[in-house]
Image 1: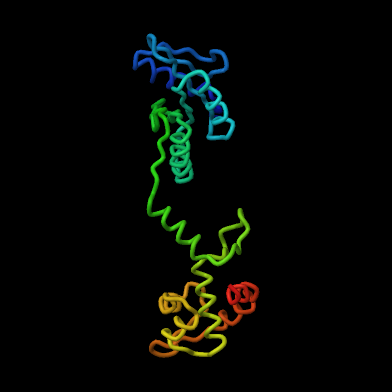
Image 2: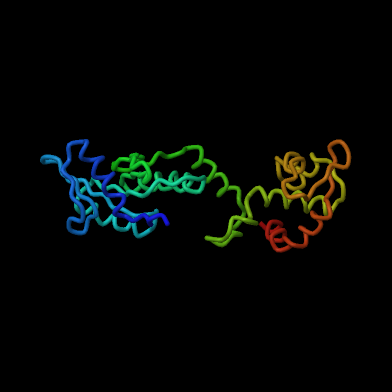
Length: 230
C-alpha cells in the first residue's frame, strides 16, 4: 500500500526551492511552517497544506503580520477540477497579496504560480457600464439580494414581459406595433431571439405568443401589473 502523503512531504522540495535562491531555510519556526532568511531581507514564510482550504488562507493572512513575503504551498494534482481550483486560487492569492507554490510530490518539482505583491485591481469600464445600464433600465426592485441567478427579473425580462402583454391583449401583432405599444425599442429583437420560448413568428414581421408565453402571463401576473403601473 502506498504511503499516505503528508504536509511534511512538501517541506524538502520547498526547502530546496529557496536554498537554490540563497536562503537559509528552517521548518516549524514559531507559528510558521517554513521560514526562509537571506541576509537582511524580510523573511519569507510558507504555509503548507495538502489542499486549498479556508484555514490555509486564514493562516497565511496571519503570517502577513510577520512579513509581506508569505506563500501558500499545496500538492499539484491532475485533472480539470484541480486546474479550475488552481486558477481560482491564483486570483485569490493575488487579491490577498500572497504567493502560491505547487509541489509535484512524485518528482518533487516545485512551481511558483504567484509571488507576493500588493493587489492593484483593474477596473473594467465596460462591465461597470453594463452594471449601471441594467440598474437604470430595471423597473423597481423585483429581486431579493442573494437570490439564485436562475429566474431573476432583469431589465431584459421586464421588456419581454411588456411585449408579451401586448400580444396577449391584441393577438398576433406586427413587431413595430408591439414596440410602440409596449414602449420597448428592442421588441423585434427580443421576440425574434425568443430566449424564454414565449414568442413565435406567424408571418413576416408578425408575432404571437406560444402556450409557454400564455403560461408566463399567469406566472408573472404580479410583475406585469407592477410594470403597467410604473
